[in-house]
Image (cartoon, rainbow, N blue to C red; front, side, top):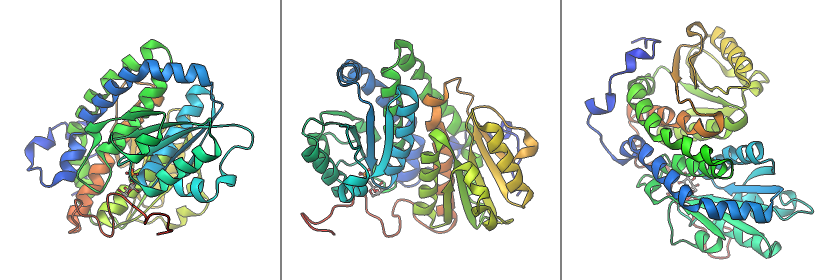
Amino acid sequence: MDIAKSDASFAMDAASTRQITGYTLAEILTQPRAWQAALDRVAQAQNALRKLWQEKRFTELLVTGCGSTYYLSLAVAPLFQQQLGCRARAVPASELLLFPETVMPANECPLLITISRSGRTSETIRAARAYQTSQPQGFVLNLGCYGETDLVALSNLALTVEEGQEQSVVQTRSFSAMLVTAQAAVAALGDETQLERMQVLPTCGEQLISTYHDLARQLGQQTSFERFYFLGSGLHYGLACEANLKMKEMSLSISEAFHFMEFRHGPMSMVDEHTLVVGLLSQSARDYELAVLREIRALGARVLALAEDPVPAQDVDYQVSFHSGLPESQRSVLYLPVLQLMGYYRARARGQNPDQPHNLTAVVVLDAGSAQ
Ligand code: F1P
């Protein structure tokens, strides 16, 4: 069935018309409630965050995590640099642990932001310990979903959103709750109104899921797609990587993430009529990004665009429009629900169980003091 292009045709509240089975789907559908909890948590910590930033005046920032939380770090670092003017870099925790001299700034003591759903991932804990050993005056800010953990105990300040906890190995609600926490923390360091205006986010998320649940399910069930490419730039590259990981983890599909303009420099060779390319459009580079999507579509691929405002219907096959009214630095969580749902439904269509992803565990814990 060819999917209609119009947004309006997905206005039906699809979630209410289908039996929710398993916990991954429920976690995806309920994530806007965790966003509200994240906003509330940051509001409580606003004075502590402001005091930290005014006292320390950080010029360097390192953000680290593993897997999904490394991709979240890739989304958080450019956000802090863009909004707060510090130099920010995201690295996998294993790089900070094993190759610190390639990561730590030479003459500055950076703020280390550790991101971990569980707070129990060995690499992230060991990286935080190594940082503290090398930087006794250092400061660790932790974003996570569990309070009583080794990583929280290691941090100077922890922003913990327990409503992000989930049974699934695959991070969905936890990821978006931690992203909203980071975005709200940046807003809290701005003027008073910034954090307040983010209060519309949960409602926007509910409306988005209701409007586009059917599109996500139909795209996920379109088994004629054989490979997926997720394109994102600036604040959105980390989210393109996370959407890619969801598609891989849940449905075992061939999937890759690229910066938009990088796609022409080789990966475009892989595009054919069995390809779905998903564009996480920005505001400032939208014209460049749309040009890439038009070229891809001319090669026979199908294109899904996600953006704040509608794109020209002739440029894409499917589209999701947020209509949030929020600035780009506060709305990027809205790219996630539809792409998480698409991965979920593709997994189901391919006979996979998203609740039990292949070869994965919820937390990677290494033997004490050993390499594995
Ligand atoms: C990190 C992580 C997840 C991944 C899987 C295994 O966990 O790599 O990103 O999706 O669940 O663990 P955490 O440090 O965020 O708890």
